[in-house]
Image 1 (cartoon, rainbow, N blue to C red):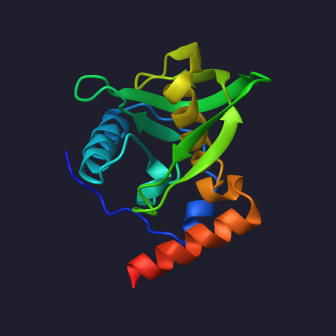
Image 2 (spheres, rainbow, N blue to C red):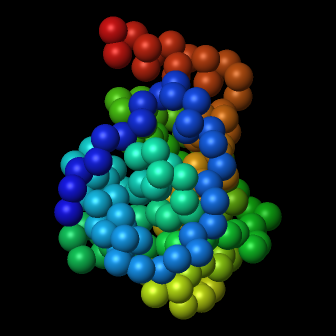
Length: 164
């Protein structure tokens, strides 16, 4: 497992939509392992291939520590609940800044595993937030795009100041 370099905001590639994965092979499994190592080193609880400049629909999420890694290939949200929740979010591409984002509380998604097998699941709580956040990234939507203009400008200003 290798720790890969993470694209940093405001890299325009962070807003590039990702293509579907079509080949399920050892390269894909190795990339998922590298993403997990990169995410842990950041540190973070979720990361996409796009965060490291590979524009394929692959994300890994680890909410409960070692042994709880979830891998989602070609994830797609099929349904959003009408009820909303607010949660503090940030990004491995914009470390050190966070803000509250409002998103649907529950989702249903479809995805494939590393062997290409199709799955469907429902998620709520932190997993729902993480999946929506990472699928946004796969669609070329950076997390601060979900903030009001004023809050987005504050976050960008704070991040630029931190970056010096």
